[in-house]
Figure (cartoon, rainbow, N blue to C red):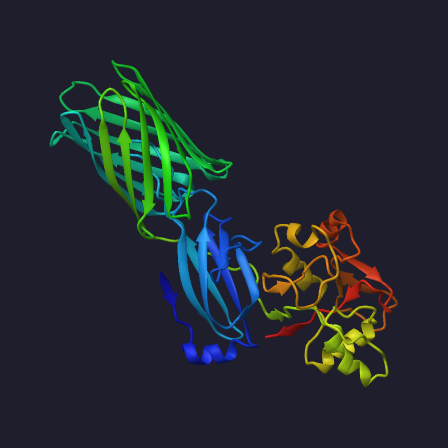
Length: 436
């Protein structure tokens, strides 16, 4: 667990009730799932993740990639009022069965693998190291030790294509005392199918003893830290290898597998991965506003409305049928403002989908529903007024979907702006922002 102390805990706790802060998370590779504050449900937006409306104080962050071969990571952060904290993380791998080819992160890192394999009357100590390089390239050096003697050594290059999780490797092998060398070519792939994490390696060795090898591992992840698997390996003979990977820390994993063939064997290994350079990443747009978590409710607007002689229900539903002029006047009354179209589009782009909020749109109370990306009921409740360029315009802009939309229309409208009469209607409400 890593801790970033950005302010003294006690004052932060006092401010947490109302003050807001920003949290941006960048990972390599990206598209990681983000879990905040022990919540079992992931945030809708994966990495890059941006939330400009976090409460101040202490927060826990848990990051995990869809591929279970990457090491999950956890952080504790403390956020200060009015400031945006950026968290950068480069994922490491917990991957290998003792002699299989595997894929590596695309940035500079060192990977070490060592273990002990006992089979029959002989023992083997695989010693592998890899150097990860940018753009998916990597180098490998291995010294398998058998019966306390180095029998061969291997030097190779590898290229990984991450979007498809496939890779190619070429190794030069020099078996000691054999009088010949060999070239090994490998094709490797990794994917997640249903509940399984699959790793496949197909290897061809060009030598005076042309050989082919195949390795397939199917694992079932359990709580991101433990993955039992079963592997099928064809070398000189076909063997089945039940085993398990255990994540022992952010940089270390342990592995145990049992080889079942004509000869019984057991492998115990430790794998480690150390990054020593991280690509500098910049936030494309700094957050300069804080969004209100909830839309303005009837109860909140009612006190302001009494002064103007209008009638509003006394309940917690979002206020609607408010003219643009009255919405702007209320925003000024509470020292906030309406969001611009650009600000709303930036917030809408942080959502990957609107399934949860648009599945069956219905009017909910302004304070009901989960908070996602710092906002409650971004879609499917009420659309919202946008700040006009001209306060006296004959038409006005609004954005988003409402409870009146079908699920399909809700998803479509949730990323669109539209125009309406400044007088408003029963599907347009108010959500305010505050400048930092």
